[in-house]
Length: 300
Image (cartoon, rainbow, N blue to C red; front, side, top):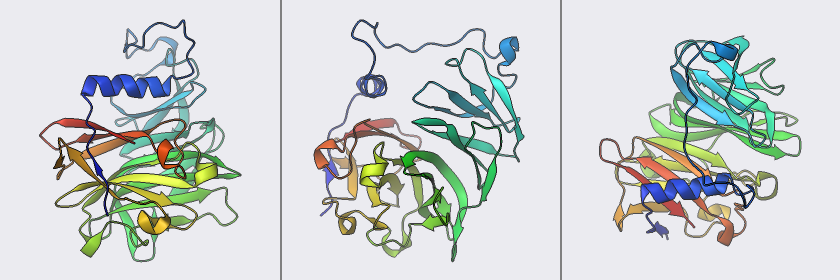
């Protein structure tokens, strides 16, 4: 039986709650969290950005930041919370659109360009090409999200969501650092909500912050009638109920009405998220409902 999300938060409140999760370690005496901009921006001062076409940005727990620019197809790095930036030497192919970093190790990052993925384990000094996520009879055709997990022993998981052969929604993962690293496809895994291949797109994914303990990955997928929040076990290579997660996949709702369309999505999990404990499966999903509205839901 599919569990339905019925808790819908106002957008402003949800942003405050997400910010609270991200900055939960701040001292009690700190001022209120607030949004701000660096000015002037962009600028040539300090070798910061010369191209204001920012495609994606990623921040590690130690404050080191990476961003990619869609016009230059370059990666930039900041070691002082974004005050100044340095351009990394590697120049990627066209359509550089995604960057992700391991939250607890800012030296481990990945970028996505076209449908290819490259990874660095030394803070962007050198790169390895992971190619196009592909397994037998399935190849990524369009990328919608890219994520890097925390360490699981010597392994870091690289996750990619998008559309695969036949325009079916899919999630791939790569076990970098494993004895025989390879891309894994999840579209045909037991429990995936993809009946009759109707999942149009996988819109976003996230690894559990405690992936070394729970081996969990989550994803937002959409078909022609519903938007789902699904959970995957990296250990059993199964989704949802067959993987031991009762009431999954979750049918995302807005005021008790199923959300049936989505253009893109984002996932933020609580720092203490633990897939093996249903009381600690707390996170947020942001959904762009095509041309309708932006909906932010809490998952608990």
